[in-house]
Length: 242
Image 1 (tube, rainbow, N blue to C red):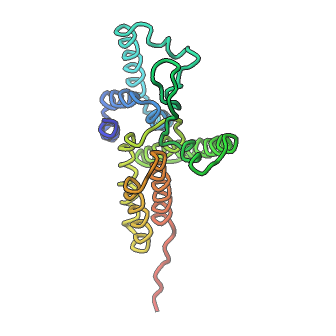
Image 2 (image 1 turned 90 degrees about the vertical axis):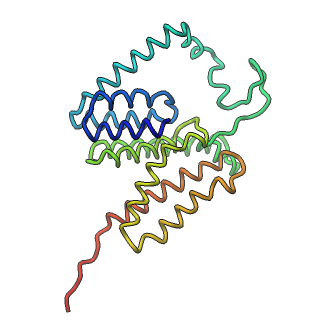
Image 3 (image 1 turned 180 degrees about the vertical axis):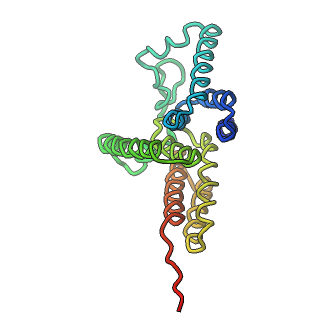
C-alpha cells in the first residue's frame, strides 16, 4: 500500500494534478515512522519551487483525518502522554508492564547491537549519521531539479535513520532499486559492480538470521545508489582522433 501511494503521489506531481498529489501525500503519513522524512522532504522541495498547491491540500486532508479519527475514537491521543508510551517498540509485552523479551527491529541501532556496539557508541553513530543525512537532504532540496532524485534520497535517509521499522516496510525502496539500476545500466564499465551489489541486496532474505540483518538491504541500496550516481555522472574522456 505504501509503495502504491508513493507511486500515486509521484505520478500526480509529475502531471501537476495537485488535488490527487495532496491526497496521496496525506495518506502516505499513515505510517510516519517510514514515510515522514520522504513526505517532509518532498513537501519542502515543492515549496522551494513555489508549488504550494499540493502542500495545502495535504495539510487540509491531514487535519481533516485527525479530526475524523478523534471523533471516531475520542481520547486516542492520551496514550501519547503515558510514561511507558513506546515501550512496545523495544520490548515484547504480554500485557501491561509484562515484558517477556526484547524486540528486534530492522533499524540502525539494532543492527549495531549485532556487532556488540554499546549504547553510547551507537548513539554517537546515530547522531553523526543524522547530521550527515540532514545536510544531504538540505542540499538535495535546495539544488536538485528532479523529483525522483529527491524522493530516492529521502527514502534512503528515512529508512537509514528511522528509530522503528521492520523488514516488511521495505517495499517503497523498490523505487530506489529501479532508479539505481537504471543509472548503472547506462555504463558498461559500471555493470559488474552494480550487478554484484544488486545480487547482494537480493540475497539478504536468504541468509539473514535476526531481522536486524535486514538493515543490510538499506546499506546495499545506499552503496548501489552512490555507485550508480557516480558512474553515471563522472566525466567521460573525449575521443581522440589520430
